Structures are given as C-alpha cells and as structure tokens.
Image (cartoon, rainbow, N blue to C red):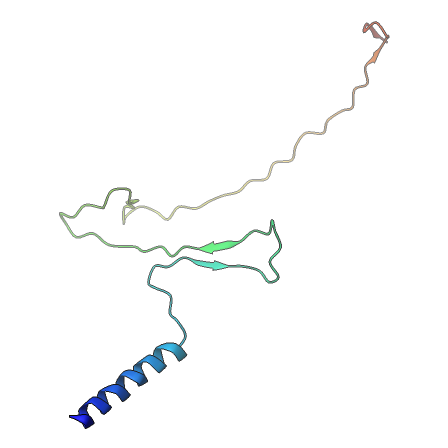
Length: 103
C-alpha cells in the first residue's frame, strides 16, 4: 500500500512540475494582441482575429449573427482610388470698419 501511494505521489508531483514549467498555450479562437515595444500611448495596436469558415451541410442553417457567404460568389476585392483635391484660390476681402466691402 505504501508503494502504491508513493508511486501515485511521485506521478502527481511530476504532473504538477510539468504544468508549472511548460509554457501556457492560448485557447483555440483566442484573440492575439501584438503590442509594439516600447509601448507609447496613442500607438495603434494590431489585433489579429482568426476567421473560422464552416461549410454547412444541406438542411443546416447558420447561427444568428453569422455572416453567410455563398460558395459560388466571387471573392470580394477592395479598390482604393486616390483623387487629388482641387486647388483652392485665396480670396482677400477688404472691408471698412463699418463692415461694408471695399474694392
């Protein structure tokens, strides 16, 4: 009986030591935050959010709030067009002390 309790104690001590020494793994679906070093206030922080695609079987419906993408639909493309702003002319208006416009 003492040998069995001793072996169980050593196994438990070994499991606790492994849990303390091994690095923690993030849970599946966790949000990873990448912060620049050194962190300065006002610096943007990149947040990576993994996207999980699930293919529904015939007869299944998506959960509430889920975005449904048709498998046959083309891949969406974002196009950014830069348009130059028109040049503004400086207009100087001269007025008298009374507020009337003079030329």
